[in-house]
Length: 150
Image (cartoon, rainbow, N blue to C red; front, side, top):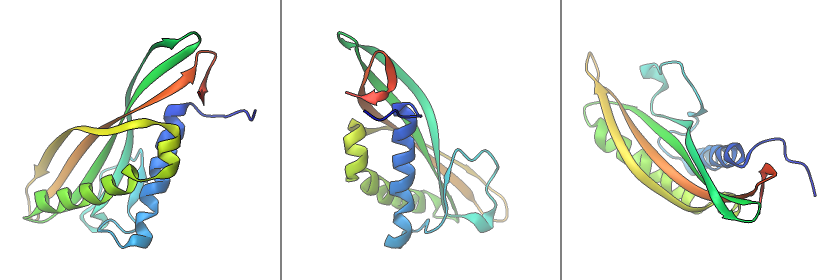
């Protein structure tokens, strides 16, 4: 048994990052602009971009010494232009397809689903928009170690 240094939630986020980074080779709209936990504002010249953020998590008893975790994460799709909603939607679809079929992610967690989206935009010389998609994924962990998937 190898000792994992990160919780299952963190390992899931790392795998999502890897899957979205792989989109670069696929020629998506966010080619080289995938970020993890970025807090700085995006400049217009940095768009389109995807930012992966950790969200809430819950755990409940599943069996003796096993917990079922429901982990959330958010994908922010940053775009610009008058058709920002369409551009953000297209980027969301590309990202969703990438993570939904990722074998590594499906090993760590089950039941990936997008539970809600929230659009926001700011006007100015050029419209800057952000679509935040909230996802949930489930994983089983041993009660004695949050890093181990049962």
